[in-house]
Length: 324
Image (cartoon, rainbow, N blue to C red; front, side):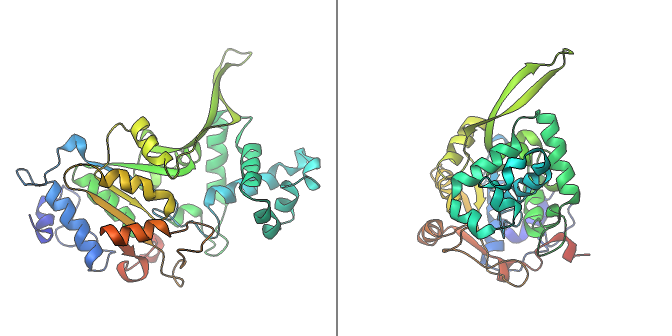
């Protein structure tokens, strides 16, 4: 079944014609449409049974912007400032002093362990329900420093169309992200149409407790349980999904092993990378970037013929608000 005839199999709600209207015609768009067509044509050589139509997407840099810092990091930094009155010792204690004085250079010099300490201080010691409310309140009020818009406005319109098209052809769409599980789950269904049970992410330990009034709660503890990044992504897919994806999309070296795991399966497979090439409408970065570095995965994609989406050339628009 040719990609050009894919419209004929679209489910109700999709108009006949261009099923990915925010994508420019080119090799990436044609490869996506061809893959969906081949894998959903009954009796075709590459047909994939519906239960096996698993599609996994990284989040940061793949479904929404990740610059100048990962949005969960921005949330954690804002939480330090919101909680500072309760912790006067933070004014002189690193890494909190650097956060409170907006000394990003000093904070970066402190390394990954400093950021882990910030996240531990701002993401734990509360119930999961309280944390969900905190995340949603922040998303409702926080604004991106460059675009001056809510962070959830900075999702990629072309990827929203792809998610919807896959679901229209009975693919089950999952997020598989290095971001925090409980940071993402409160909003992914509203923004992406991906319910919380289809979100795989990094997680901390939670503990069941009964409060004095007998109410059961889950408390977030300052201990890492699982890191869903790099080689952790195939492990997370195996643990929480239980099926190898037939399609996977990422944007950085942290997604390389997920794409390798997808490619190693039998039958038709699709491996995609979003390459950030548009410094005018979004950001341009790859090999030397401290956020979303695309280096080894890029080399492997070129060597193995994976699909690379060039943001500048392949996307007509980047954000939904551009359509309005």
